[in-house]
Every structure is written in structure tokens, then in C-alpha cells.
Amino acid sequence: MSILPTPPPSVRAIKRGDTFT
Image (cartoon, rainbow, N blue to C red; front, side, top):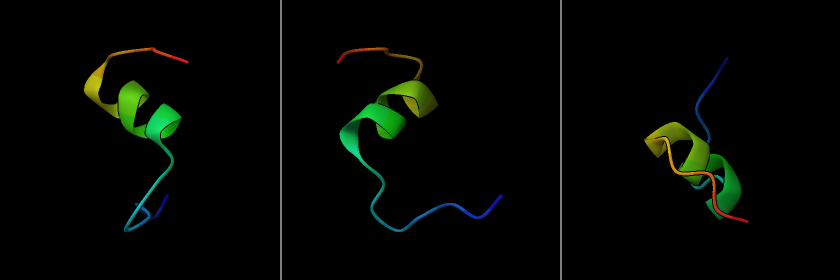
């Protein structure tokens, strides 16, 4: 999968391990 330059906050949260909606 290609990492988007500016993914949505939700996706960024998952990447970091923080699941905030």
C-alpha cells in the first residue's frame, strides 16, 4: 500500500495507534 502524503486524521490516528474519532 502506498502511504498518502496527507492522510485523514482518522488514518493517522490508527498509524500512531490512537483510535480517536
